[in-house]
Amino acid sequence: RATPPTIAPTDPGPQSTDPDARVLREIGVQQQDVDENRAVIIIPDGTDHVDGVTLDFCDGVFTSETLRTARLQVADVDRAANVALSTEAVLYRNPAAVDRAFAELRRTRADCTTEEFRAPPDADWAEADGVERLAYSFETIDDEGNPTVGTSVYLRRGRVFLGVYFPEGTGPQPPVDGRTTVGGIVELFQERLADLPDSVVNRKA
Image 1 (cartoon, one colour):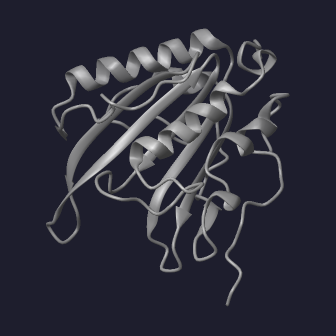
Image 2 (spheres, rainbow, N blue to C red):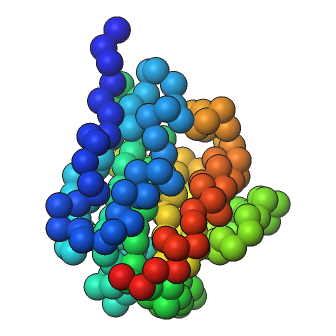
Image 3 (tube, helix red, strand yellow):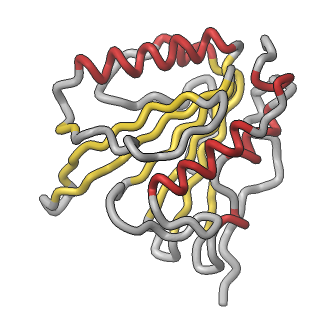
């Protein structure tokens, strides 16, 4: 059986000079979270915090993108390269920069006319101390004309941001650390953010 590819043990982006950039590998989905038939891989341009897009949402304009200091986006894929979820860990200059990003997300959602949104999916999800969450579910049409419901979840604590993206956000999910529901998987990532030291989340880079 072929060994699936894994995240290369390098800093998340050669251009990043953020002293906390290493934590980005610790808060998103990791190879040890998934079973042996799946792989966690860096997506193309997934370490680019300068020109790579983080907030690709409803054709919105996000001026907060210029305030990122490090970024790592990875995907959990099967052997046919089908993505179950991706996580995007980002450091911003300071907590106020993520305040701006979340304000831009809320405003873009309120003004959005390009997506068919469903009710927020997180009404009964667990919370984590100090972690703020925005969760959106929306219907999309695939290349064959079939409707699917995607779910995008945005988490933040201080200056640390984590996007969790589910292309198919309904029903059971491939296990992530043994969790098979969207809410349970998001709870895992919330716990990782909550466990970060204050020196990281409150630093002004």
